[in-house]
Amino acid sequence: MTGLFFGSFNPIHIGHLIIANYMASYTDLKEVWFVVSPHNPLKQKSGLADMYDRLEMVRLATENAPQLQVSDIEFKLPQPSYTIDTLAYLKEKHPNKKFALIMGADNLASFKKWKNYEILLEQHQLFVYPRPGIDLSEWENHPSVVITQTPQMEISSTFIRNAIKEQKSIQFLVPDAVIDFMDKKSLYR
Image 1 (spheres, one colour):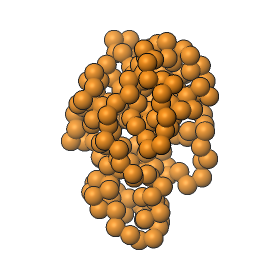
Image 2 (cartoon, rainbow, N blue to C red):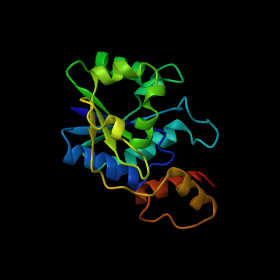
Image 3 (cartoon, rainbow, N blue to C red):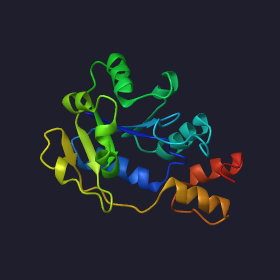
Protein backbone atom coordinates (compact mmCIF):
# COMPACT_ATOMS: atom_id res chain seq x y z
CA MET A 1 0.00 0.00 0.00
CA THR A 2 1.22 3.47 -0.89
CA GLY A 3 0.54 6.36 1.47
CA LEU A 4 -0.19 9.73 -0.10
CA PHE A 5 0.99 12.68 1.97
CA PHE A 6 -0.55 15.81 0.45
CA GLY A 7 0.76 19.25 1.28
CA SER A 8 2.16 22.51 0.04
CA PHE A 9 5.50 21.72 1.79
CA ASN A 10 6.27 25.44 1.90
CA PRO A 11 9.01 24.49 2.80
CA ILE A 12 9.41 20.82 3.72
CA HIS A 13 10.88 20.33 7.22
CA ILE A 14 11.89 17.49 9.53
CA GLY A 15 8.36 17.27 10.97
CA HIS A 16 7.07 16.22 7.51
CA LEU A 17 9.98 13.81 7.04
CA ILE A 18 9.49 12.18 10.46
CA ILE A 19 5.78 11.64 9.72
CA ALA A 20 6.46 10.17 6.25
CA ASN A 21 9.26 7.91 7.47
CA TYR A 22 7.18 6.73 10.44
CA MET A 23 4.28 5.88 8.10
CA ALA A 24 6.57 3.95 5.72
CA SER A 25 8.39 2.13 8.53
CA TYR A 26 5.88 1.52 11.35
CA THR A 27 2.54 1.00 9.58
CA ASP A 28 1.19 -1.25 6.80
CA LEU A 29 2.31 1.31 4.22
CA LYS A 30 5.27 0.16 2.12
CA GLU A 31 6.10 3.63 0.76
CA VAL A 32 4.99 7.23 1.05
CA TRP A 33 4.54 9.67 -1.82
CA PHE A 34 4.78 13.38 -1.03
CA VAL A 35 2.09 14.89 -3.25
CA VAL A 36 3.10 18.52 -3.65
CA SER A 37 -0.03 20.65 -4.02
CA PRO A 38 0.13 23.62 -6.36
CA HIS A 39 -2.54 25.25 -4.16
CA ASN A 40 -4.75 23.92 -1.34
CA PRO A 41 -8.38 24.95 -2.01
CA LEU A 42 -8.84 25.67 1.72
CA LYS A 43 -5.76 27.94 2.04
CA GLN A 44 -4.82 31.42 0.83
CA LYS A 45 -2.39 31.42 -2.10
CA SER A 46 -0.17 34.33 -1.00
CA GLY A 47 3.21 33.50 0.54
CA LEU A 48 3.43 30.23 -1.39
CA ALA A 49 6.80 29.59 -3.03
CA ASP A 50 6.82 28.51 -6.68
CA MET A 51 5.47 24.96 -6.98
CA TYR A 52 8.55 23.73 -8.87
CA ASP A 53 10.82 25.12 -6.11
CA ARG A 54 8.71 23.34 -3.48
CA LEU A 55 8.82 20.12 -5.53
CA GLU A 56 12.61 20.37 -5.81
CA MET A 57 12.96 20.94 -2.05
CA VAL A 58 10.94 17.77 -1.35
CA ARG A 59 13.09 15.89 -3.88
CA LEU A 60 16.28 17.11 -2.17
CA ALA A 61 14.91 16.22 1.28
CA THR A 62 14.00 12.65 0.28
CA GLU A 63 16.77 11.69 -2.16
CA ASN A 64 18.43 9.29 0.33
CA ALA A 65 15.18 7.63 1.41
CA PRO A 66 14.01 5.06 -1.16
CA GLN A 67 10.72 4.51 0.74
CA LEU A 68 9.83 8.20 0.23
CA GLN A 69 8.88 9.41 -3.24
CA VAL A 70 7.84 12.76 -4.68
CA SER A 71 4.83 13.32 -6.93
CA ASP A 72 3.91 16.33 -9.06
CA ILE A 73 0.65 14.67 -10.14
CA GLU A 74 -1.46 17.65 -9.04
CA PHE A 75 0.55 20.03 -11.26
CA LYS A 76 -1.08 18.31 -14.25
CA LEU A 77 -4.65 18.49 -12.93
CA PRO A 78 -7.11 21.40 -13.06
CA GLN A 79 -6.68 23.74 -10.08
CA PRO A 80 -7.71 23.74 -7.39
CA SER A 81 -7.51 19.96 -7.35
CA TYR A 82 -9.53 17.97 -4.88
CA THR A 83 -8.17 14.79 -3.29
CA ILE A 84 -10.96 12.65 -4.75
CA ASP A 85 -10.05 13.75 -8.31
CA THR A 86 -6.32 13.24 -7.74
CA LEU A 87 -6.99 9.72 -6.44
CA ALA A 88 -9.15 8.85 -9.45
CA TYR A 89 -6.32 10.00 -11.73
CA LEU A 90 -3.67 8.09 -9.75
CA LYS A 91 -5.76 4.89 -9.80
CA GLU A 92 -6.01 5.18 -13.58
CA LYS A 93 -2.24 5.70 -13.96
CA HIS A 94 -1.25 3.04 -11.39
CA PRO A 95 -3.95 0.34 -11.52
CA ASN A 96 -1.78 -2.13 -9.55
CA LYS A 97 -1.23 0.18 -6.58
CA LYS A 98 -3.48 0.54 -3.55
CA PHE A 99 -3.46 4.09 -2.19
CA ALA A 100 -4.11 5.33 1.34
CA LEU A 101 -4.24 8.90 2.64
CA ILE A 102 -1.95 10.29 5.31
CA MET A 103 -3.30 13.24 7.27
CA GLY A 104 -3.01 15.06 10.54
CA ALA A 105 -5.67 14.78 13.22
CA ASP A 106 -6.55 18.42 12.49
CA ASN A 107 -7.46 17.48 8.89
CA LEU A 108 -9.48 14.50 10.06
CA ALA A 109 -11.41 16.80 12.39
CA SER A 110 -12.61 18.80 9.34
CA PHE A 111 -12.71 15.80 6.98
CA LYS A 112 -16.50 15.93 6.56
CA LYS A 113 -16.04 19.25 4.71
CA TRP A 114 -14.00 17.53 1.99
CA LYS A 115 -15.49 16.93 -1.44
CA ASN A 116 -16.97 13.37 -1.55
CA TYR A 117 -15.45 12.43 1.80
CA GLU A 118 -17.79 9.41 2.11
CA ILE A 119 -16.39 7.92 -1.11
CA LEU A 120 -12.83 8.56 0.10
CA LEU A 121 -13.63 6.62 3.30
CA GLU A 122 -15.26 3.79 1.35
CA GLN A 123 -12.37 3.34 -1.07
CA HIS A 124 -9.27 4.24 0.97
CA GLN A 125 -7.74 3.91 4.39
CA LEU A 126 -6.73 7.04 6.26
CA PHE A 127 -3.51 6.94 8.26
CA VAL A 128 -3.75 9.71 10.83
CA TYR A 129 -0.94 11.30 12.82
CA PRO A 130 -1.82 12.92 16.18
CA ARG A 131 -1.99 16.66 16.76
CA PRO A 132 -2.07 18.24 20.23
CA GLY A 133 -5.55 19.03 21.51
CA ILE A 134 -7.48 17.31 18.70
CA ASP A 135 -10.19 14.90 19.85
CA LEU A 136 -10.48 11.90 17.52
CA SER A 137 -12.93 9.85 19.59
CA GLU A 138 -15.55 10.14 16.83
CA TRP A 139 -13.20 8.26 14.46
CA GLU A 140 -11.57 5.75 16.83
CA ASN A 141 -13.54 2.72 15.71
CA HIS A 142 -13.98 3.62 12.06
CA PRO A 143 -12.88 0.67 9.87
CA SER A 144 -11.09 2.96 7.37
CA VAL A 145 -9.25 5.10 9.93
CA VAL A 146 -5.87 4.09 11.38
CA ILE A 147 -4.82 6.40 14.21
CA THR A 148 -1.04 6.11 14.53
CA GLN A 149 1.48 6.81 17.28
CA THR A 150 3.60 9.05 15.04
CA PRO A 151 5.96 11.22 17.15
CA GLN A 152 4.63 14.77 17.38
CA MET A 153 6.75 17.71 16.31
CA GLU A 154 5.82 21.28 17.11
CA ILE A 155 7.29 22.64 13.89
CA SER A 156 5.41 24.31 11.07
CA SER A 157 6.37 25.69 7.68
CA THR A 158 5.09 29.06 8.92
CA PHE A 159 7.57 28.92 11.80
CA ILE A 160 10.39 28.14 9.32
CA ARG A 161 9.40 30.97 6.94
CA ASN A 162 9.27 33.46 9.82
CA ALA A 163 12.66 32.31 11.12
CA ILE A 164 14.16 32.85 7.64
CA LYS A 165 12.62 36.33 7.44
CA GLU A 166 14.11 37.15 10.85
CA GLN A 167 17.48 35.67 9.78
CA LYS A 168 17.40 33.06 12.53
CA SER A 169 19.02 29.64 12.17
CA ILE A 170 16.88 26.80 10.84
CA GLN A 171 19.69 24.23 11.04
CA PHE A 172 18.35 20.79 12.09
CA LEU A 173 14.76 21.91 11.37
CA VAL A 174 15.19 21.62 7.61
CA PRO A 175 17.56 19.25 5.75
CA ASP A 176 20.86 20.91 4.79
CA ALA A 177 20.30 20.35 1.05
CA VAL A 178 16.99 22.22 1.33
CA ILE A 179 18.60 25.09 3.28
CA ASP A 180 21.26 25.39 0.55
CA PHE A 181 18.57 25.45 -2.14
CA MET A 182 16.55 28.13 -0.30
CA ASP A 183 19.70 30.23 0.18
CA LYS A 184 20.64 30.02 -3.51
CA LYS A 185 17.13 31.05 -4.55
CA SER A 186 16.64 33.60 -1.71
CA LEU A 187 13.34 31.91 -0.81
CA TYR A 188 11.12 33.32 1.96
CA ARG A 189 13.38 36.35 2.54
